[in-house]
Image (cartoon, rainbow, N blue to C red; front, side):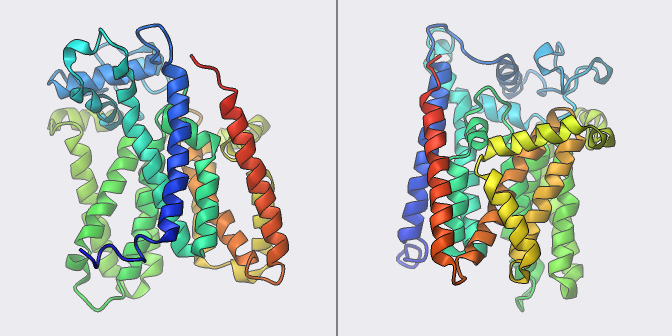
Length: 411
């Protein structure tokens, strides 16, 4: 036990990161409270009510959520069309099950007589937001050191878009696909680095294989078009382990089988329903016409800046430094930049609900990229100047976000 509770695992950096995540959670709880603090018996959105009903029905043996919906709901018109016979073309039952599952802990007789249960469907997504923040800090700290790790986590903890997605505040629960895609990419990278160890790589990596499979299942299960992370994960495995490509392919295939099994489990192992749902699933759905419309570029830029207003200064500065300074062009900076840009392009190419999911998923990767470049700049003779500029920018960013939260009315 004493070997586990070491300074490396539970030192000052970990406690500071935990404090930032508690601040993030407090802000998200305020958003939930402000939305649900009403005198009416229900303040849930129409899409949330549909997810709760579908998940609750599946848990109690009443049919698989969204495969198909008994009556195709108008509130999910963007992901359910008459041509698909009421099937949810964008999501598996995972989100509906996650939304409805916490209600099992509440006495059923009180679900209609009290309003406190309205918090329950938000609890899993609040947890996922914290998990994504913790994962981001862990990865950024490993790649960029303490400075980069804390900058990435601070940007995340005060990001309006991440707070909104975590609280499901007038938004869809896209935080789950963001967490799954982030986990899948960096778990694949971690697995690739372990392939150089002189052991039986497949058997030794079984924990990471399971973790990679879970990440793939979460990302694809929460948004079918996130299946693009599957070939991306393979590409990183092959690139980072060129002398162990056979083992990399075996590990990737095993993780895909684990992910497929978990995805099948969200359908409660109903084989016919699963196959029929996969036939209606929109695994691509991209259209390249969006790239010819100037308004799309403006909208995407607006959404990225809304996710982190500090990006207006950080991204141009980081890109200019990355292009001009060869020292910053290493894998730890390049990989998150490429994945972030790819997700932005996919967000532009998907005009339906999947586009917003890709754009949100790109933000954590951009956090790591700008934090890595800033951490490199802080190792130059201009450290004092860079620290002062970044500190002032982050301070203004935090103040702006807290003032915006304070202006949100109750109800």
